[in-house]
Length: 177
Image (cartoon, rainbow, N blue to C red; front, side, top):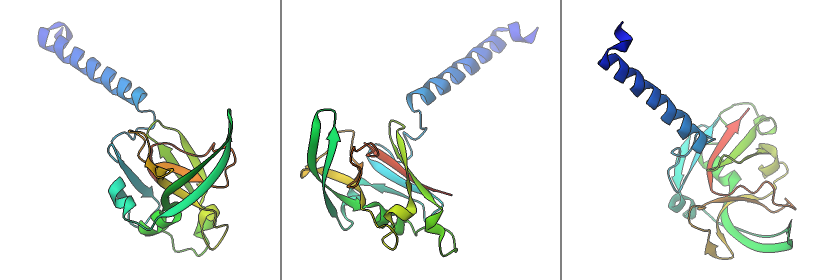
């Protein structure tokens, strides 16, 4: 029997080991995105005209927006000032939604995902300046200081009273239908 030969046995063990490493790697990276944007970058993809991978430095070169935010935490009310780039500006920089329909913004969502796999959905209409125009930013500073290492970018929305949709260490913005 071939599978009992030493080379067949070793090949089978190597295949099993490869499968185990792949499964363990998926568990460590539940969103499957740890290398999408590298250690300090942001991928903008999905239904956009020009998918992009941006570094934090690329994002810092764009026009900045400052949001003063007060939200409730388990310890009480917290206030902070965040500096970053409007999500709408990032979407425009990727060419916008890749659809000719005039009201495409009303039926698309943004899935914004952190490196840990935590993700939130926003309606494109929520942030479209011609519609609701709510300010949502990808922040790189909090109170004029960079975030802790490993958390280069954070989604911040001024109107989210409990900050439950703030995503830490954002690595991806995906436009979905």
